[in-house]
Length: 424
Image: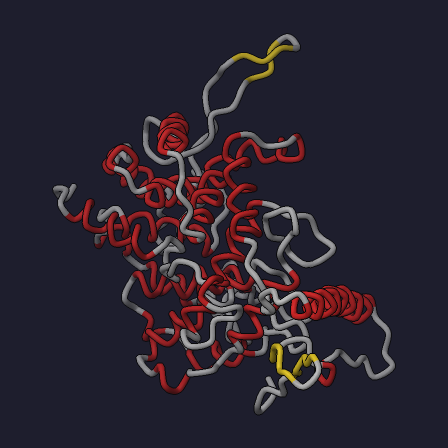
């Protein structure tokens, strides 16, 4: 990161229009004459982002001449329309995500909550009933799928429960927030499922007989915590296993001795906060690694060293900063530890599809995954710099919990609901 932001000003005549922290020409990538695939890709992506920036500036001037608003704008209504349509019917391109349908529900509902949209009550009820069909009789959530027999499809049994789809199902229901949604969660069988994938060393299999990584720990701990079923048996040895995933770089890998990665770092840090063991984190190396993941020109985050910017890491990396502040209890030290204004500019200029929905980067298609996590990152960036909302209050979105990635309103509502229920 630069010692101090060098801001580029877009001017019209003598009047200041907007001051950018991202897209600074002095921060463009320099390969020093060494051409590699990754360096070529980095320059290509910077050119794509630059094109979006120039296109915005040119349109910006037209808007000023016409007396229209002249700040980056969140396409709120277009995103809401895209999300509502997607929750009702998806195109053929989503057919390969049959086993991720609880994720599609979560991404869609959570995104709408971030945008503070009014969601049709019947649609929400339909989603609750669908997710209930994904609940396995012995606990956890998979996805109901058809079975191919004799060249035609019949209704059949569902997929086995998985910690990732269980997290998605529970957080979708929490984000819906109705009594019908919260009451549909069978806490007893959910607990039994979590216990069935818990390993003696403190780790969790993502499904029975499945792989073990820090995603499993996070998914198990987060759903247990928010539904008020977390106990000493579930957490035994888990903190020591999770902290073993922190690497020499400072971030967290999927498991011990693996490369640090933004998604796994989020899961590791959030898990330790849920366990009240954040003191175990080597915060100085984590802070250094995180700070280096924000791209100097684009303003967004990369997920790993020497990789490209991606809108989804606006959340996976960005959400770790407020969690790290909480862990250190020293917010003043971390103030300005990432450029929240530049991140907002990257999201609003480079990640929005003009038809609605958000994307990885300018040459990628929109999808529900990137819509969800890029909007989540926008919320984090706005929370981080409350006095500098890019585009003004009309771009303001709902505040989210960085630990659970649900809106704070619905996290609080779920906690109150489940706290009234008897312990298992």
